[in-house]
Amino acid sequence: MAEKTRDVLRPTDDEAIRLARGLIRTARHGAIAVLEPGSGAPLASRVAVATDHDGAPIILISGLAAHTGGIEADPRCSLLLGEPGKGDAMAHARITLACIAEKIARDDPRHARIEWRFLSHNPKAKLYAGLGDFAFYRLEPQRASLNGGFGKAFALTRENLLTAGDRLDAIAAAERRAVEHMNEDHADAVANYAAVFGKARGDEVWVMTGIDADGFDLAAGDRVLRIPFREPLGDAPDMHKTLVAMAIEARQARTTIGPE
Image 1: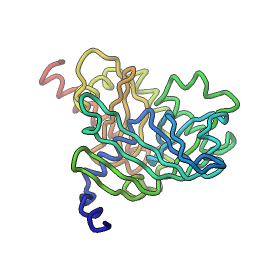
Image 2 (image 1 turned 180 degrees about the vertical axis):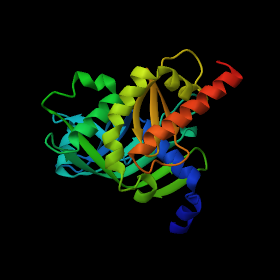
Image 3 (image 1 turned 180 degrees about the horizontal axis):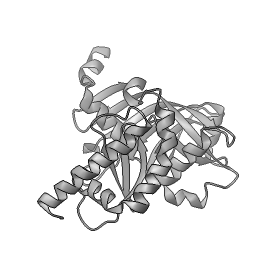
Image 4 (image 1 turned 60 degrees about the vertical axis):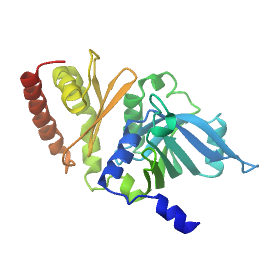
């Protein structure tokens, strides 16, 4: 049986890693599974999702929820991400992550960063994020199973899923000001990013919702786009240089081919 299981899995390559990270970064919701306290039975529920700078999922959940009690009793959990799309839901990519949940206390130095990223990615959560019984949890990925569609199964490690680097904190510290600057002063560039790099069509109004070492995120209502950088950012100053270079490239491309 073990031999058959290995035969089902494809070798994990760069394309699989990009797909996995894209599914995690773009997800706004997913299904979390925990162990029910007392009975030990599996318990699944839907949760809103964002990511920390290294790509670890973040959830915001109420202390009154059954799945919160499960996490507090046993932090092991799994998270299923991936939109079904049109047609057969089983033909669309999805990923299941095995995680260890860590509650982020309000006095934790990471709380402000995590809160901003989560609410930028899920703005409707602002209605309840400040309520006393809600708390953020960072889900530390241990491994993952990726299904890219029929016949495309992969096993991924923690290292495959997360972005490493000693400058992530510096990039995180520069993120909010850069995002606000792009949305307030360079809406035309954001629209061009969506059209050229995200292949967006139509007249949606796109806003930037986050920047990390690997790329940036755009949203137009319920639609989300992930725009990867060609090369990961090495430090905070690279953020400005990369965004400017991409803005010039996108503007030139739209000038050449014309708006859709």
